[in-house]
Amino acid sequence: MTQANMALSGDEKAAARAEHHHHQWLAFSLTLPLICFLVFSFIAPIATLLFRSVYHPNVQQLIPHTIALLNEWQGKTLPNEQVMTRMALELKTLASKRQVGQLAQAINRNLPGAASSIKISARKLNKIDDETLLHQGEASLLKSHPAWKKKATWLAIKAAGQVFTSQYYLTALSLEENPQGNIQFNPENKLYIDLFFKTLKMALIVTGLTLLLGYPLAYYLAHVPSRTANILFIFVLLPFWTSILVRTTAWIALLQTHGVINSTLLWLNIIQHPLPLLYNQFSTILVMTHILLPLMILPLYSVMKGIDPYYVRAASSLGAKPTRVFCTVYFPMTFPGVSAGILLVFILFIGYFITPALVGGTDGQLISNIIAFHMQKSNNWALASALGALLLLFIIVLYWVFDRLTDPNKLKLV
Image (cartoon, rainbow, N blue to C red; front, side, top):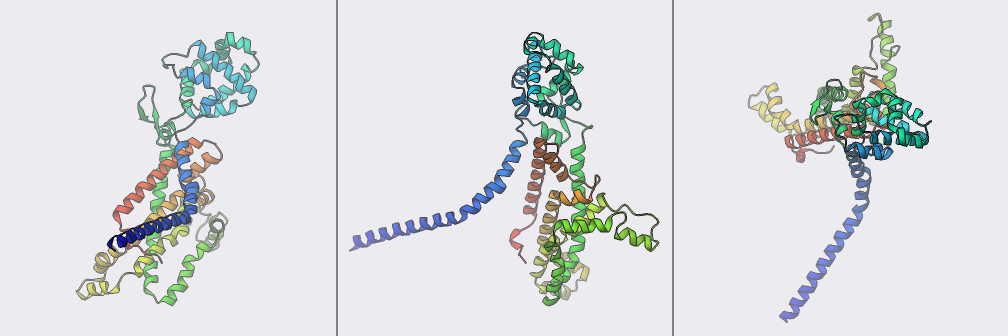
């Protein structure tokens, strides 16, 4: 009887394990569409971005034989006759295929002004037959343009021909590699590092303004009757129900030279000439503060609503003044909401590019606008990927700091 019971118990355990595995596979199959969506819409694009920031095969594919020979060149003198002959032949081939522009554009990123010399040489070499180039390639190339007599041209071609390179990260950080292989700061190319700092400065200003405006409003909403709070919340959430382009266009109508604000101030004789309110950093900060303000209010309100009022009353009953009660009791309890709002506003501001592009002009552009420019117009995807990867790294570090400073378990949804 005991053996029968043990056998039965063993069968029940096996059945329970089988049922457990069945439930696990069922749960996995239900989440599989979400996993696939995350892989294709989030993980794969980020992996592609990181890969494209170091992978640059264009030049190597256009002039493979020249790059192979240049990899053996030490760079102390001009390349030998074999390298120049091969370069002349491949330039002629590219000219016949109408692909010289791709090579010229790639080399020009390493050596500004090289594009014109490459195109001129290709046009001249295309008129010479292959047999002549095989025997007189070096002379024909040197005769086509004086740039081929300079080591800088060949060094730029060799650098651009590296399939895997950290060059674009160096460019994004205003660094460069000297002929000795040492990395040094390039003071003549501070465009991207200046843009990073300008974006950081404007992000801090917008975050500070949204916190300054959003904290008292969230406090008021959390302490008024529910009926009043619900009505006021309609105005807080109203921007979410309006297209971002509509809101941005409305601000343009308000801030432009002959817009509502300038026209009103001129009519009231407060100013004599229109104020420059649009296409600068001021307009970007103002409009982005308006757009991101609700994202600061919502987490603040959710935390404030969950604070027990008896803590404040207890501190007051013990003789603490209102200022001390706020600084030592109330504000520390709202810190999770403050941190969440700061994180949301800061990260979203850094990634915005439509609104700054429309209202910021040249002075109000952010690093995201430069990334979009390289992706859409200059076709320098490698540099755009490097800038995007650095921006992603900065956001990850910021989130890590946020995770260490706050306790996510204290945050509640509205």
